[in-house]
Image (cartoon, rainbow over all chains, first blue to last red; front, side):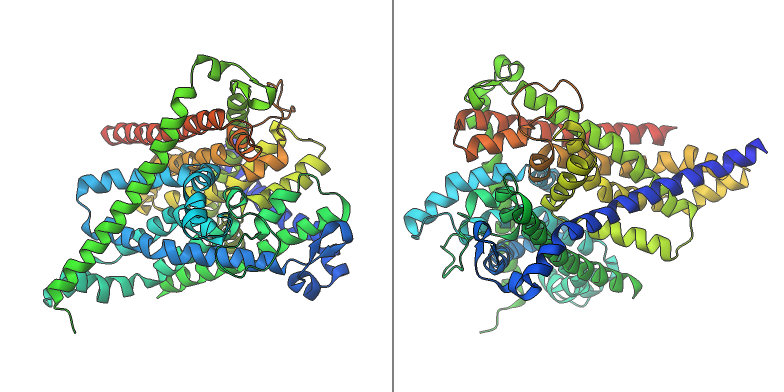
Length: 285
Length: 280
């Protein structure tokens, strides 16, 4: 009797722990939506998402410039960061001498561990003046944010792509080499296509990381709420809008920031479930 | 003009090497720059005095204590929940709708930006639960933030334990609980510890979620319900308000060293535990 009880107990406890974990995670969604939805309803979804003017003191809440901001900075980070990241993952999986690999992997971990604000300061000291002096504009710009974000998404892109290349059966590469291909030909025409789904997932997760970054880009983007005309213009993103104004916002203004959070939440959910679906489809094959 | 296969190989290899060297160089540059600018600032007083004059003078003792306490709260709370969930998913239930829902939400929420966790913590812990801006609010918010990571890494490493281990145990008439605690858990420990360490690093480095939930006072926290400023937040405010670049670099250098210790020390620890397991 006692023994039976002792055997059942851990399962019950684990179930309760799982249940509470899942409820907390559900709570997040509920609370963000409950706080932000009323103002979206009042302003109207279209006017909120596509509105051009953000002036909380006058009751104007349009976040379109920030959506453009988030997308442009992220696009820049992907264009700069992804090719380098994929090269690094090929390097680690295929070319790196063992000793260098053993140095590289922890280094990438460290790169991922450094607080984003440190990258922000680094960009502020090196990237921003460089852009101001040699390319024009105020320096605080989409380009500055993109460069620093490109560095910050590297660990995600590198580690996930590397895993997906390493997970391929060795027969793929051996077969290609046996057919007389060079190592690079084997990588390009056999291994990379075979690892494609993992690499795509890595890129999508990198995009998610870039869109979600807040503190580093507050320091680099100049935070002006306006549509940019070039990559040298300052801009504000969805995340920085929350980060800058949450400290003093009250009432309707605060609700509007939560509503910004909803938009961010939805974008990330779409990205992540796409990445998950791609990975899962690959697994099922 | 079509390149010969050999030339193509050479060009590709050069580019790939160049990319790898460039990444290593940037990493070294970032870290060395921070350390070179920051380490000369760090001395005994910097470590043991609380910030004075908005952080222009004095040290950063209170922010070190704040960082450690918030991280501790987050880990102590998130680990049991994360581990319990992982064991439930991997050992106590069949694949079905419930496991799919739990796994889907854990995976989706792992990617949610920290500022959104900050918003949640602000409204839920600070406001609704009346914990105000405090170490507790900050720690709980971070616990929620790292929960998906801990669930995912733990579940993966529990699943990676070969079934034959369990079968041998059962054949020796061990109960399920004995099997889990004596065989599965030790074998999965390395992966589990890895996930927890990753989370410690994220807590130490986090800024956005903490600044919304733990406040930013300079004084030494007296209990878990007092507000505090973490090192990352202190660094951010020093730079953003232009208060003191020197002290900002000092703080950044300490954060980088702390992260380094967490990564390296943790790996060493895990490796030692692993080799002990093997000889047993």
